[in-house]
Amino acid sequence: MPDLLPYVAEQPLVDHHCHGVLHRDADEATLESMLNEGAEWPGGSVFDSQAGFAFRRLCPPVLGLPPHAELGDYVARRAELGATEVSKRFLSLTGTAVMCVDTGFTPEPITSPAELGDLAGTTAYEIVRLERVAEDVAAAGVGAAGFADAVRSALATRTASAVGVKSIAAYRTGLDLRAERPSDSEVAAAAGHWLASARPGPLRLADETLQRFLIWCGVDLPLPVQFHVGYGDSDVDLHRCNPLLLTPLLRAIQPTGVPVMLLHNYPYHREAGYLAQVFPHVYVDAGLATHNLGARAPALLAEALELAPFGKFLYSSDAFGLPELYYLGAALFRSALSSFLRTGLNEDLYAERTAVRLTRMLCADNAKRAYQLGSQM
Ligand SMILES: [Zn+2]
Image 1 (cartoon, rainbow, N blue to C red):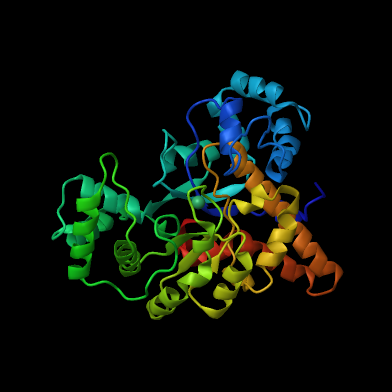
Image 2 (image 1 turned 45 degrees about the vertical axis):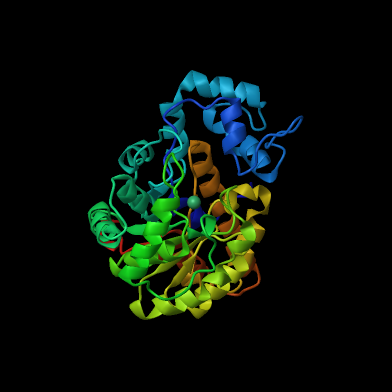
C-alpha cells in the first residue's frame, strides 16, 4: 500500500457500525464463509476476489507471516496463537478509539460490546436492533393489543445506555416504506396478523407497518436511527435496498432533527450521498464495501464523496466475526482517504491544514457529533 499521509495514519477512528468477533478459532471453512457475502462453490474460493487479495496481502504480516502466505499456513499460525491473541492483534492495529456495536445479529456466540472494547482497547457503545426487541417482546407472549406499549417500554429499557438504534427493514420488507407514523390501532392489527401467521421456530418480523412503527419509536427516543442500505447481507433483494426509496420517510423525520444514518449503501453510495446533501439530518458511510472492494476502495470513497457533504460522511467497518475484517476496514479506509486527500492537495483544491481538518471530520468528529459522543472522547 502507498504511504499514508501522517495525519491519516495517526488519526483515531470512530467505527460507528460494527458487530462482535467470534470467541472461537476460525478454520479455513470459517474464513471462506465470513470473508464476504458470497459462499464457496465447487472448485472456487471466495478468496479469489478483491476482498480476498486484500486479506492475503495485509493480514499475514500481522501474525508474523510474509504477505500473500498460503491460506493453510495462515490458518495454522492463527490456531497456534489462539482466537484471543489474534483478535487483540488485529483490533489494536485498527487505531479505533470508539466502536458502536450492533448487538442484534448473533447467529453464533460473539463478543459483547464490553468484551469487544476490552480486546480492542477502545470504548464500545451499543446500537440496539429494533426488530430484535420487537421479536423478543412477541416471544415473551405479549398479545396484539398490548404490543405497541410493550415495545415502547422494552425499547426504553434496552436503550438506556445505547447510543443509537438500527432498522433492518431493508432485508425484511425493503426500503419502500410509507412515511406516516402508524397509530396504535394499526400497530395492533398488524401485530395480530404477524403473530397469527408466524411459523414455528424463532419469530421473524417482516411487516411494513411494524417496521415503520419501530423506526418512529427510535425517532421518539430520540436516538440516531441507523438503516441497513444496499450491500451487506445475502438475504436482501438488493433492488429493494436503494436508499432513494426512503425519501418520503426521510422527509417526514426531518422536522424532528433526529439523525438518520444510512449504512453501507453500496452500490447506491452515490444515491446515498445525494440524500446526505439534501437532508440536513442524513449521514452516510461506505461500511463493509470498503474492505470488500479491496484495491478499489479509493474509487469507492471518491464516488461516495462526490455529493455527500464532508461533514456527513462517517467511517465504519461493519465487521462481523473475524478480527481481520476490522483491520482490513480500517487499513483500506485510511489508504482510500489518504489517496483522496493527496489528489486534492496535488490539484491545489485545498491547503494542507484543510486536509488535516477533513481527516478529523471523516474519521471521528462527524460521528462524535451525530451520536453526541463528544464528552466521552
Ligand atoms: Zn451491518
